[in-house]
Image (tube, rainbow, N blue to C red; front, side, top):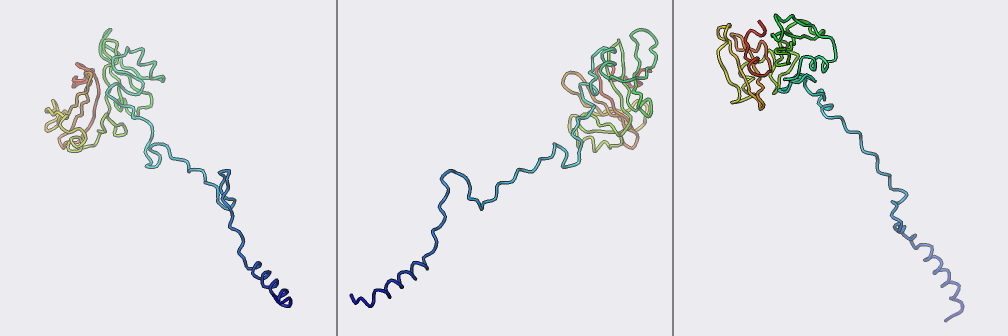
Length: 206
């Protein structure tokens, strides 16, 4: 080879070397993500059940077993202890006779009333629309709305005192029963839950 060409060849090699792309970064072998990969963000906090819809997460007070901590069939003393607050009391005509306990906070003595007979808590009555009966019924609903909730379980008989009114009842396992009273327009005016025979006392303790 012509010795005069050697310097030129060396220059060409140097130029080509300068144009070679840099080696691609090799994947990490220790399992760590590349430095440029953003770290996964923490998951957003999930809302409590019912929170997203704005509904209360607490359970309704009314059930076929009782009202809050008051259990149907418990003694009067057990019911008072379970309530844990002050209760107004009517006066029984004699020992073991029917009488009612009502919460101090009730705006009317008939808003919520707990029936005691034979020294046992046997029924509770509600006349306010702020309370919801087992299954979703409440004061102010129509018979049609109740039938949409309870279906064929809802049994009807004529009201004893209100012409055109009805008693609409639903029986539960264990003997407890829910009874709605409607007026002549078919709207619920009150409802009650209790054990037989007291659940069918149409005059309450009267």
